[in-house]
Image 1 (cartoon, rainbow, N blue to C red):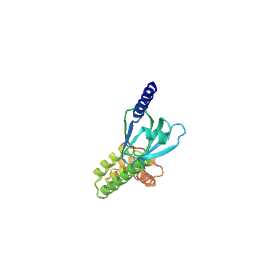
Image 2 (image 1 turned 135 degrees about the horizontal axis):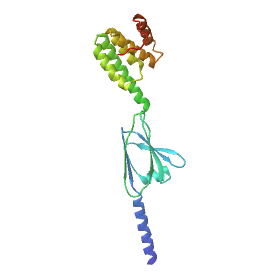
Image 3 (image 1 turned 180 degrees about the horizontal axis):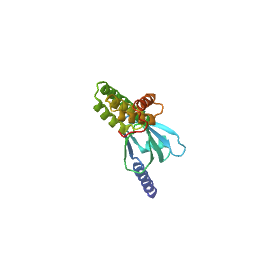
Image 4 (image 1 turned 60 degrees about the vertical axis):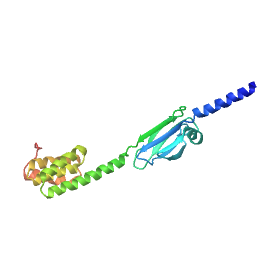
Length: 205
């Protein structure tokens, strides 16, 4: 009888132990459909377990993929920076992981350049229609976000030149050439204005 009680207690203990270790992991990402990988923290072997959103038991991850109670969870999606977090089996508590994926640097740069190009086309249209005030105002806004693009200062110089504000035009052509010595158009206009108006020294805009 005593042996039966001991076996019964052992059986109950195993059930509760199993339940205590059966927590569920919920993984969501913004945007969705990010690929999910489990990496063994010791040997760095990596296995794909699905895509977001995903619900999976920690038992399955630990026993079938990670082979360890401690592992690295990785989320990857084209165009976004990878996300990595160190995970450990904690007990009976369910875990929710909500990840906002960051757009990768290269994608951000491409989007920024596309935006800049579209805005510069609009500036050129304004200059062609002699709307110099609007063109300069838009270039002022672009300068805040793209201070190292010489074409912005070159176009400012062109707007002021066509508006017959030659001192301001020369200042911006000089600035464009100073930022990018390969900007030939800015250099030609800089030299032309310096010679035409004998403006050898920088003047206030």
